[in-house]
Amino acid sequence: METWILNGWAASADAWSLCGFERSRLFSYTDQLDGLPEKALEAADSVVLVGWSMGGSGALRLLLGHREKIAGLVLVAATPRMMCDEGWAGMTERRLAALEAGLRLTMGGGLFGVPEGRPNPYMTDTEENLSRGIGYLRATDLRRDLMASRGEFASIPVVIFQSERDGIVRSANADFLMRIFPHASLRLVPGAEHALPVAIPGQIDAAVRELASR
Image (cartoon, rainbow, N blue to C red):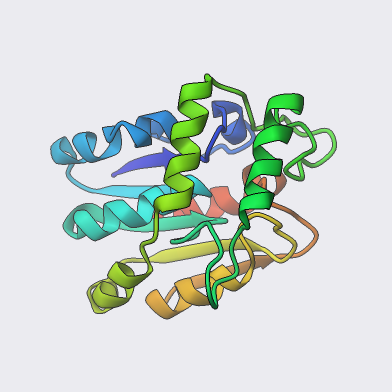
């Protein structure tokens, strides 16, 4: 059984440095923008997907297109729709612009709620890549497709991690995911923000290992 990580926007591999689960592949946000997970899945048999933030959206997109190859999902601060619209608790354009500016100024340090003494999971990248990522965040909306297909997902084990204080992916997003995966295990994390892979690595480890052992 392979285990793949789909990383968040502008996130580095250090985001997962405190997690000890065995992983087969780690796809950066640019890998995802280039469609590399989809290409790799064509040659894979069965995979557990671990998706954080933008990578959670990527994991949901892979599920929609390749249901038969997904053996489990661990969704970490994941959302099918990053931006707000009518009736949806997402980011405003102003908030997204502030995150982009802060990322460039601070390499993400402290801006996204990195716990003290933990590695900074963020990096900066080229202007072109960051802009491509922002375009993905603005445009992606998987809600309708997920709702239309939700009856097909009952056999897939799912664990959802969501911070109660996340200012990027609002906790209300987990309510929507639980409608799609009513059998999922929901882990609401108090006192943490968006950088859950460095905030609760032990909990994520346990969830991934449990799914991978099935």
